[in-house]
Image (cartoon, rainbow, N blue to C red; front, side, top):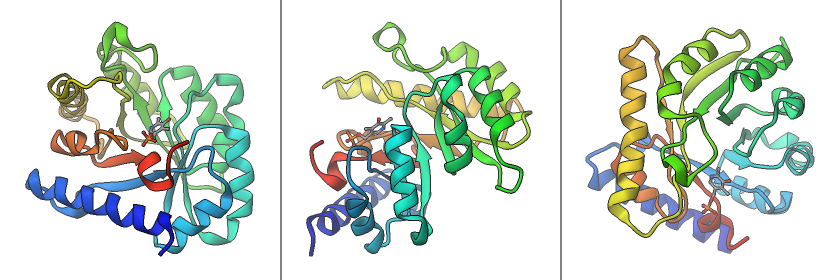
Length: 226
Ligand SMILES: *Cc1c(COP(=O)(O)O)cnc(C)c1O
C-alpha cells in the first residue's frame, strides 16, 4: 500500500471514530483532501483510493493540476485567500469556494461563473478568533452578508467556514468551532438553508466533528508534511 493509501485509511478511521463518539453517522462528515503544494501524481494516487474532493489554495498551481487530472472526474475546492481581481479562474475552474469573506468577491464570482456550469458552491468564511485572526468576516456581519450572497445568481451558498487561530487549548478551540455552529443555526433560523460547516484540519478534526463539522479539510495527515 502506498503511504497516501495508508494515510487516507487512517484519516477516514479518525473521522469514523469521531462521528461515533459524537453520536453522528459517518456519512454526515465528508473529507476534503487538501493537496496544495503536492503534485498531480499525489492527487492521482489519492483519487485511485476513492478520494474525490480536493482542496487547493493557490490558483495557478491548482489550474495545472485540474488540467492534468481532467479525466479523473474530481471535485475541486478553492480554500485560499481570494482577492476580487483574481476571481475569474476560480469561477471558471472550481466546484466550491470556502474562503468568501466579502460581498465584492462573491459578486465577481457570480458574474464570472460560466452559464453552462452548475452554480458555484460557496462558504462564507467567518473569523471566530476575534483579534487573533485577520481572515473572515466578523460574526455579526455573517447574517447580512450571507443573505446578500444567497441572492446572487450563479452561486449556491452552502455554509460557513472557519480557521481558528492555532492553539493547544482544546477548550478554546471547541468554543471557536461551537461559535461557527451557532452562527449556522442562527442563519438557518433566519431563513437560510445552510448544510455545510467547513471546519477542522489534520490536528483538530475530532474537535470540529464533536462540534458539528460536516466537512473537514485535511492536508498533512493525508499527503505528509508540506
Ligand atoms: C492548508 C490548509 C488546510 C490543511 O491543513 P493541514 O493542517 O495540513 O491539515 C486546511 N484548510 C485550509 C484553509 C488550509 O489552507
